[in-house]
Length: 327
Image (cartoon, rainbow, N blue to C red; front, side):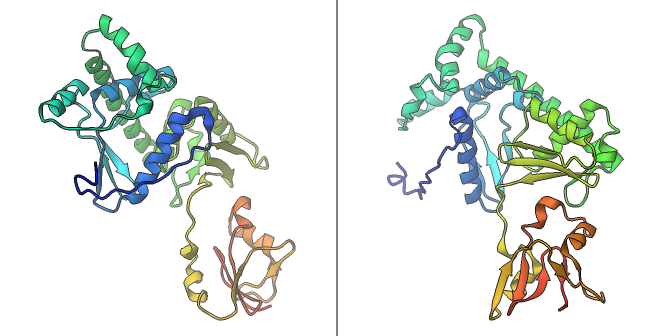
């Protein structure tokens, strides 16, 4: 079809690692691949329609979702460097089919669309027709409910921003201040965390995971608490809550010293060793690297991955620490 219409076509294979929820994982993989292809000021348009929106609301309802899930699909949202836009979200499927038939348009029907082992197909082919015999204008009613939930979601976002600003909860590095956060009532505290996770484009945690995050806030200082779900981690260190995407791409030139040293002869990158000592500029003697990293407030889980820049086996600089002197 793309060849006939002279449209550029790119095929990308995706691999689903978690077989327990194929639909959800396939959806995330698809949008991740699409997000990588979007440049600034580019718009991805998808043909989601009113019936898709109604199905999404029911799927989220049966999962026990909160306001964010029941708001279903937004008409537009940021995606990668661009925007994802759904221009047909308020148009019924039948209206689209009638238009396509009247104008003799052709389309491809995915074979998997008839497989009722997939929950969305089960809703579409088995549940929705039954409900439609009892509730007239079912899709419009469900979409109206999704719209109400979307408006409620905007209110929760507004409240989160009020709390974040009033209590100065977020640092410049997108960490949350634990001492200030726990002064909030539990429901407002959870609202701030959910808002912050969404702003970082993290997958929304389940109720169980959210309660584990709350427990991290009140854990003992020496407990080194950690919560994991999907590809994300929440850790606490020195009164701050860290949010980590363990699959996030790390650029080689993230460290400012990388460009300075990479083209020099006999340049190498190494990582810390147990018992290692370094000499900071202006210091008379070398210090334990462990002590230096602790005084620099670098979390323990980040220390072993910090790059150390060597020339001719001489340590010249270290990521997050700066340039060093010969001992």
